[in-house]
Length: 363
View 1 (cartoon, rainbow, N blue to C red):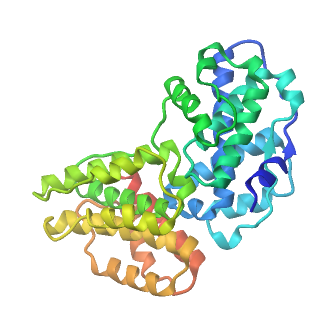
View 2 (cartoon, rainbow, N blue to C red; view 1 turned 90 degrees about the vertical axis):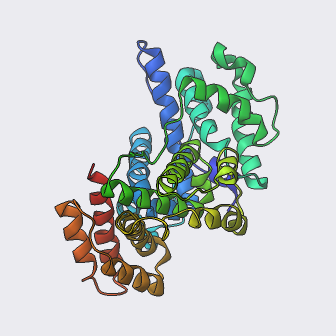
View 3 (tube, one colour; view 1 turned 120 degrees about the vertical axis):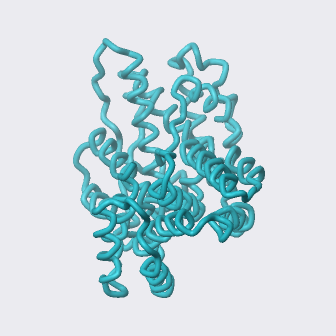
């Protein structure tokens, strides 16, 4: 798929009337809307992202932001149906996105600039290849073309021509000083078996992001990954097992690779070797594994649909005792998971998602 064709083949966003007051709030709102578009554009290119349980809420929120901006569109219905479950079987090739026409730059320059800056803040971290460089150049072109409306604080960090992703790096850094990156998915690190299960879900989520390099590249995803591996290092240390995370930190602190083989070697394998093992006491180890496997069952049902994997994961889950203090909602969902027939991907996804979210909800 041509990235440029996708970007410039969108329907127009109508000029949006913006009130004169609260310019800062309006600017940050437009910035957030541009980020929503950038993420949704990536998710449509790589739909496995929205099969990740902890990513689905943002996927749907981003769609609603774009629907509000654009209004009715024939592709809205299928997008709603797909994102409700993240099931890739419901994904369709065609989707009408949006871009900012020249009229909006004239009528509402604050909105147009900050919306485009929001897109740039996400795009600047993409894995580097010809497509991502073309995409970055298209954004740099718009920003340079409309340099007369650049806020004073960002003039020194504006793109100097079209040189691919590097053209957006300085602007991204400046934008993050104004609107700091918030890790996504959100993390909560406590103590106890429920926290061990949540850590397992976080680790599975990071592994699933490895399958989806566009989503992994986002600053919020990389911050999430950094927080998870640092917590994993702390948890291992508490159980007298030192692990080395320097290489993972280095990759997550820069533009991640796009090649899945490279991701497997440089990221997936080191993460797999850093999870709970037999050096952990039995109770926290099994709580960690329970969370990790349940999240993976949901992702497999939504995206991979591998019967052998589902069989192995659900058999393993059935063999684990439920950790002390587990919530009634999580208990009910986990027990129900064992009853769903093989190959009923929709039902497996629904129940495993409910179990994952119930574990996440317990503090």
